[in-house]
Image (cartoon, rainbow, N blue to C red):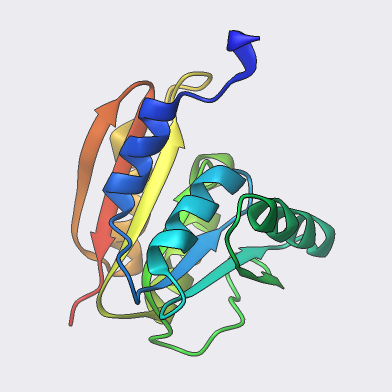
Length: 171
C-alpha cells in the first residue's frame, strides 16, 4: 500500500515553494495533481481565485471535480497552453506541475510567454517538475522562462527528485 501513497513531505514542500497566500489569484496549468491544486486553492481562500487550465475539456472537468472532492473550489477552463482564456494581469501566481518537461522547448517558451501575459506585475510562475523518471537539466526549465521575458529566473530547490523553478514578471 505504501508504494502508491504520495509523499506528504514533497507535497508540503511544493505548497511552500508556490507561496500562495490568502486573497491571491492562482492559476494551475494542468490538473495532474489534484491534492496540490486543492491545497493551493485553499490557501487562496474565498477572497482569492483559483483556476485550472488544460487543453482537454474532459480532463479539465475531471481535474476540477477531483479538486472539489479534496474540499476546494476551482474554475476549470479548457484551453491550449499558449492561448490562455484570461485577460492580462489576471493572476498573482501560476503553477505548472509536471508539465513543461513534457513539452518541446519551443512550446515551453510559448506557454511561459502566455503565463507571463496573464500574470500581474510582480507575479510569480513556479514550475515543479519530477526528476525521478526523467533527467531534467535545470536550464531546460529556466531557459524557456528567460526567453519568455521573466525576470529573476532561478532554481528555488532541487530536492526529493523534484526541481522547483521560479520566474517573476517585472512590475
